[in-house]
Image (cartoon, rainbow over all chains, first blue to last red):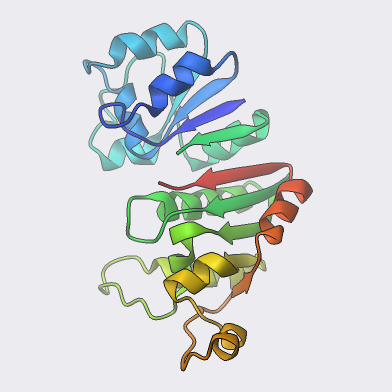
Length: 98
Length: 130
């Protein structure tokens, strides 16, 4: 299962809900959700703990749009829109946490 | 693989209409098929031909129309959500006694059954919204 998170973890608890309930699959951070993948942020420990259990991806274009592309937490895989499509193909189903 | 896309957020709001469009382009570039894009809730505002964004800004509505024309994609607007927000085609104009239409080219107004069908027919349904 692919969990797609588009909310900043500093604004909404979507990512926390995902981490509290998911039992497998992967997380894809898009739109404001990519703030969770920023190195040195208050979410870093949470993301690092999550990466011990799940793969974590972040959308390149949304990192770049926010000036965060050069400070992504090590271990988070950055993907382009083509990679986004591949992740949706690889995982069934995909859940957007709106 | 066969894809359906659901857009629940209006254009120029946050980012959903843009992300959905870029995703749709990437789906096609990868050689997959898009069976239908369904616009629901405020997402129906993606279908008004009367938007006039600044010339140096992207035109989200005409971008959808162009995508539909080039790739023969079915763009469906939820009728109940459209009525609430004033998205009108010829049939709705007559039925509701309105004096104008504003549905952009490539879109059609229909019911939620179209979303359910897309969910059944497609391998993946990807949701974008607020």
